[in-house]
Length: 257
Image (cartoon, rainbow, N blue to C red; front, side, top):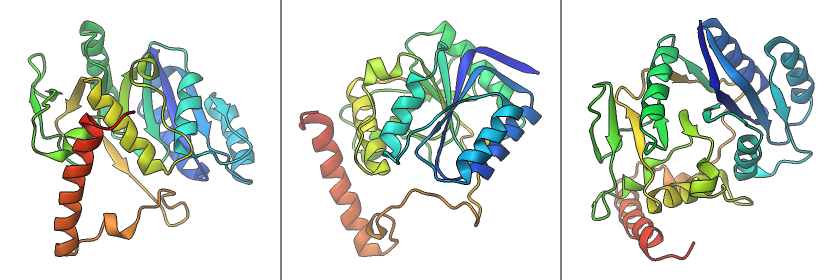
């Protein structure tokens, strides 16, 4: 059994109550216990609200919701503000942890307690962050570093909404999530803020090992992206990369926040 009394588990949710149940059950099965569990809902309709109310009796969490859907930014802000522990473990409802995760979380927590310059630890990613150096205390982790003259525009993705551990003062240091805009833009502007303020990240090197990302046919992803941003067309890919290089660097260094 792993007890993380100083950690608030924050789970964001929207219309995927069965996925939420799978996540809560899997954390219980691998022996993870937290100082508190917050489920932040983005105005899900029935029957999800009633089902989550039933889950509360089994898994003992604080449920914060809103009468109408207000978007990812609002859901992240109100969820984080409902936490009270020194650290916040953020997981979206459609992820499932590997049995190895509790041990790696414990190590990451120890490293963050020992080094207060580390703002967050990332446990999952779709790709490796391009600017990192070995973490002296543990070969399973690396440290990101600030590279203002770095050529790869993916430098902005030092922050990510994917599963991570962060400090409770995160919103105070990097600002609140932008509200009233699409979810991918909300994440983008937090990436910009995190980079500008030189956020320091501990990155788990085997970044696909500790979580499975599951979207069932019954509860598909609610994030909608424009087809042009994901197209594999060769010409569109070149144009997209050039646009991102110019746009991201302009937002990083010239645009007023």
